[in-house]
Image (tube, rainbow, N blue to C red):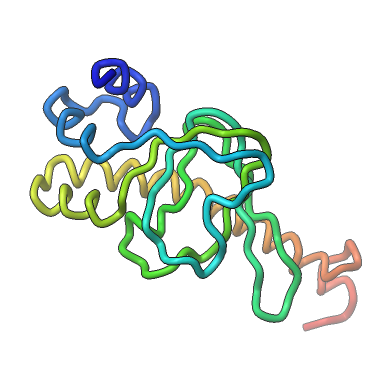
Length: 165
């Protein structure tokens, strides 16, 4: 079972090209878990405990501003990361994550991951670089979505086209 899990881990970019020693350090931190269709992995504001790597299925990341409707930030498919707030040491998740279909995940406790990074800086640096890359990809997607909403201002036109300055 442990060998199969190691082989499964390295299929995903966050773990790819790590040494066998680094993978053996990570394996005890990883659980396989599942989420049923329409169930929440976590809701916005919940304590940020776990980082999830999507193995199977699809997850929708949702954000609700205090005074606005729920926005779909992105959809995460296999290989994608959900719950990165836990890895960054944030106290709460900044968005919610709902399973769009029956899904499976590698789940890692954020505190355990941060301890590993502190104890083994080489492994920590490698993991954090990969996590940062995944976060940057998502942030640029969210950023472009927000820019589109703002520039269209609900009319389909840019604010400058409406005389706004």
